[in-house]
Structure formats: structure tokens, C-alpha cells
Amino acid sequence: MKIFDKKLLAVEVAGGYIRAAVVTKKGRGFEILDFSQVDRPDPDDDLPAIEAIKTLATRLDYTSSSAVYVTSLARAVEISMNRKKISGMKHYQLMEAVKWEVEPYTGVTGMQALIGVKKNDKVAAEPGMVSEPDETDITVNVSVLERNIYRAIKERFKVAGFKLIRVYPPEVCFYMPVFMEEFEAPRAILDIGQDYSNFAILKGESPTLINTLPVSMEAIIDHLAENLSGELESALKFTARQVPEPVPLIISGPGAGDKRIVDYISSLSANGAEPISLKKAAGLTGGGDDSLNAVYATVAGAGIRELKSKKERLTGINDVEPLVLRLKKSAYLMPLIATVLLITFLFGHFQYMKWQENSFKSRITRLSAELKEKKARNSKYDKALKESDALKKEIELAKNRIAFATNKADEDIAHVINFFSDIAGLIPGNVVLETIVQENRLEYRVAGKSLDLSSVGGFATKMQEKRWCESVVIKSIEKTEANRLGFEFSVKTRVVSG
Image 1 (cartoon, helix red, strand yellow):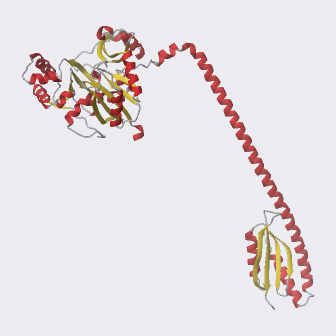
Image 2 (cartoon, one colour; image 1 turned 30 degrees about the vertical axis):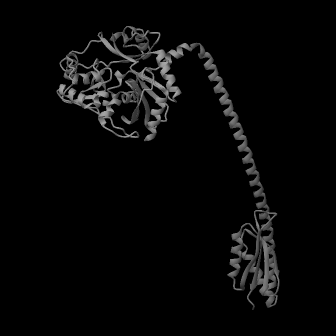
Image 3 (cartoon, one colour; image 1 turned 180 degrees about the vertical axis):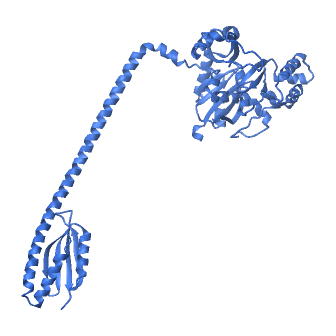
């Protein structure tokens, strides 16, 4: 899913160019979305030009803020240290110990040095070989950059609108694109640059050998132009003999874009040589010869190293002080911080309790209003029920009177009595009759109250079913003003003449 993809801008200053690549991590794999380069506006300035960074970011359609930087101003050196001595050190302790050992190798004092440190994994012994004892020295890979230079680079990236995460030496980046593809057999890569070349043999997830060669692209071209150099050819032959079989030597850097150089190196290697293949996933800056893309191996490798894992980032350089040291320096602030946190927690808890209190009060008010309304409804219902009971008693009395009059009245009287008798039996439980008026011999108007509309309709339907009924018409039905739970109705019925 795209939401989990990580993307990063890598920038490099090398030769006469400023190069950039946008690298993304998808799951456990990597993609180079795009890359491009511009001329250095000031060849004497080893720092990245602000406008060049902006131009490259726009060209590569990169709008995020994170970036890494590759520069030869950062030195990569190997220091041997006693394995047993450093085995129990935390990483920040190892960095502090190494910082004061780099001056003889780089000329950068411990006070001015910013470093990245990564211990080489202990190499497992080959079958039939004795493993190394714990008392032997271990090689520590160290990246070093002067603090002032780092700050200057960081400020330029900040002005360009980007957050500089780390700075890497080219020596720890040029071989990283090889890891974009899975491989089982050891591989070798030779990065031929403008001023020097780097060679690495890769096995598994890490290099087993990294060498810097005093061989430049121009020197090889000059050698091929019949200004033969026995020293150069001897160095290249020695390097080619170290390439593990049966795979060919991979060539990267500016030299990989020159077919003459590739063919020459291939002739020296027993398994041949081929330029590294770097593909653009996005391709926003246009296509071209893939061999020319090999010049972006180092800058793309910096992005891959940064995204690959926390362990690979250890060789990178930044000015972020380890958390443990920051906490130790700020130990005197801990009581104050704890007090502030406690007050913040208590204040937050008090506000939460106030909110709960107001919420409960509001709910109590709402439920009280609902309870009052329901009580009022029940009271009205009880009143209507009492009125219904009283009317039923009156109807029962009327029935008795009708029964008495039936035996002694004439035919019309008997007909009326029969009507009232049936009406009394048809009254639903939710209906209260208030008036029954005989408007003429054959027509009666019945009026009353009902708790619902269906009872009125049912009452009219039942009258229609009687033999004496010719027709029933509901003249009116409306909700009462005094009693909002009931309805007033008026029904007109016509009896069969007889």
C-alpha cells in the first residue's frame, strides 16, 4: 500500500555535477523513482548549491522534506579495536571512544569530529578453518566529517526547504544499488570516478572487502590513448583477479558510461564486466542509455542505505546527540520535568472530571424532562379511562332502559331501542361516546372521543355490518386541543327504512 511506502531524496556533489535521486522502499524492496543532475554553479564550492537542490527537487517532483547527502568531504576509514574491549559497549559509548581515535587517519580532531560507526560482523569460519578467537581485533567502519562542515551543509538544505538527516561518504554508498536485486553468489563492483575508483566484493548482506584505488576515469582514457601506464594496468589486473566467479564484474560511476573503459575492464576480468543497470521507476526526466545511468549509483546508494535498515544507517553522520547523553546532561531538570508532568496530568484529570460532571448534569436535566412529560401523559390517560368507565356505566343503564322500553313501545320505539342496543355493543375500548342525536327518523349523529384513529374507523366499520345500517359517514375527526393524546369525532349513520 502506498501509505506505507517510504521516500527519500539523496544528493551528491561529485566532479562538475550535483546529482540527485529519489529512492523509495516498498516492503523489503527498493525502487529508484527518478534521478537527474545539474552542473555545479561554482566548481570551487564543495558544498551543495541551494538553487541546485531546489532545481533538482522540482525536476524530480519531490515535495517531502527528508534528504541525505553524499560528499567526499566525509571520510570513510577502518579502525582496528580489541573485540573483547568493545563487545560490552553501547553504541553511543563506542562512538565516543572512536571519536578520539580518528585524528591520525583523517586529520579531524575529536572535538570537531562528527562520526558514524558500524562494527563489522564476525565472519563465520569456512569449513575446515578455525574461527577467530574473541581476543582478536575487530574492524570498525568509521565515517568522519568536521562539525562545522556538517552545519554548513545542513543550513543549505534547510534554506532549500529540506531536512538533512545524514551525510554519507561515497565509499559506503556506491555498492548499495547491487542489493536491489537478490543474489546468492558473491558479486564485485568497481566504481570508476573522476578522481579515484572504489572496489567492493559483496557477500550476503554486507561487503567483505572495500578498496579505494588511485585510478580515475581520465587516467584510464589516457592509458587507452596509448599513453600506457604499467602501474595503472597492474592495479586494475590485480583488482580484476579478485572478482569472484562466475559472475561478471559490475562497473558503476562515470566510467561505466564510456564503452572503451567497459571493454577494457572486461578484457582484464576472467568473467568479463558490465555496467550496472539502474532503471527509473517514474522516468519523469526522460530516458536514455542505461549505461549512462550508472553515474547515479553512489547517490542512489545513499538513499538505499538510509532506507534499508537502522543498522545500515549507523555509518551515516549527523549531529543528533544520543538520547542517553542528552538525558544525562539534563539530569538536573528531571525533578522540574517530573513536577510539570504531574501538574499537567492533574490539571488534565481535573478538566476531565469537570467535563464528566457537566455531562451528567445535562443528562439528568434531559431525563427529568422526559420523566415529567411521561407522567403528564399517564395522568391524562388515567383521566380519560375514568371518563370511559363512567360512560360505560351510563350506557349499561341506557341498555336496561332500552330493554324495558322494547317490550312496551311501538314499532318505531323498538327500532330505536335496537339501534341504541347495537351501538352500545359496538363501542371499542379506546372510544368514549359523548352524544347520540336522532336528527330524523332514519338518520343519527354519533359523536365522542377516541385515543387513536384506528378505533374510530373500526367503530364505523362495525356499524356498517349491522342489518339496520344503510350507510355510515365519518363527518369529522380532529385532534383535541385540551387532550393531545385523543381525537374528537363525529359519525353520521342512516338506518334502513322499515
